Image (cartoon, rainbow, N blue to C red):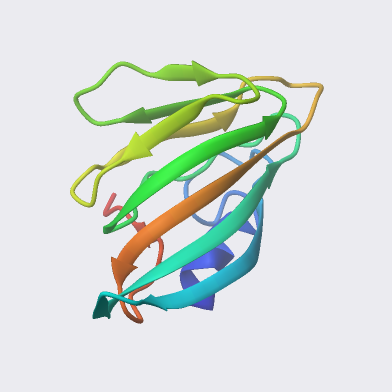
Length: 130
């Protein structure tokens, strides 16, 4: 997990989210894939404060999102946005541009887990060019 890209989730406005509150990301687990030493598994939690909005980015990984609490809105380029509730799952592929990632509520926090399968040592997040 590269810490510099995760900084994009730590503070508002400098990365184009319009000054909205940004997510808190916590690394939980990283391990080289047993069947392919060039790949690694990574698990993080993301906490969206009320009104949080992510900047446009990509993951260059396969990502599975599982919502724990609250309600979030996710979307990738070329697909309709999807509102997710606790217990629901969302998938992003390695070539997807993550155009929408936000808390659906302006008053309640949201929390979700993300599982990544990615190239070993690759960052989990790359900000999109403006």
